[in-house]
Length: 80
Length: 350
Image: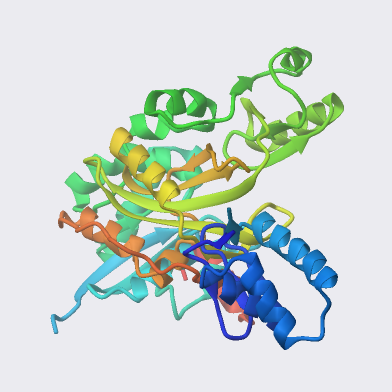
């Protein structure tokens, strides 16, 4: 999954899709994941990064990452 | 720095109300022109058009006869206004008045030297709501299937050609989405009473509405095009807020349409973008939209370009526009003296 090239993301977690005109806000974890996706990190690398830095178990990460990535794709922020 | 050229420009569409006319946004763009120092003459139809009282934007206003009064009454009035104001350019902004102004364009130029930059009668007729489906076929642009009806007796037969929901449109303005046959009857009567016949029936297309404000030079060149999505829509379907989009496909469709039709003047294109990223043209408005000031905000001053072309200048097409610029409307109560209302009501000028 890749973040579309023209998506604008500010330091505050505000996301703007200039193709659709939609805008969104994300929390710091979401912001971090989007940044990792922008760096073309795969899911395994993102998991390792998040698990090493936050008190979260693997199954919770898997579930939340699935939800978040679905949201990103449905919102046309990310694509396969 | 080159001094700005002084110019008197008459502009209609001063009804800056909840369903606003384009006059005030056009004037704002002209007031901020890099080329012109403009004196604005407002042309109004009713004494309560807010633009009449916006003296920071409109220097002098005159009532003009309703379009139904015909071209003789209009040219007589324009002649009087021209004697007083020495008008260089007129920018009409109402669909319903455009036909009269188009008919008068050669006479206004020949008799008074007044210039306009309007679509031709053929372009105006071809893009009419009732002809839009054929227009799409001719120019290779997708348009939802539509047909005109002239009587309620034709309504039951529509179900052989359309599936619900169905859009019921007035001749000039207004559209409603009908979900059953009773609603089609109701909207037919409502729109007929207001705008006359025919009524346009159009297949509803699911998706998000995206619009383009554009301008053509009459030779097939698109001088500018800015796409926008409405972010906040009023109960009349008008944009109260919108944002400029990075949508090259939409811009290319607009350019193709202008190239193919050799569109002359300002225009607004209304599209539905489906989930499959297909664009269906819903409507072509043959003048600038009320949100045209966003184009100025994005770096394309379309009203200024129109005036330059009206004066015979060659205008280089805009290459870029700023993406992610928003407009947000607001309402504002002006307090005006009754004397002003009295003057425009009784004397026809203010």
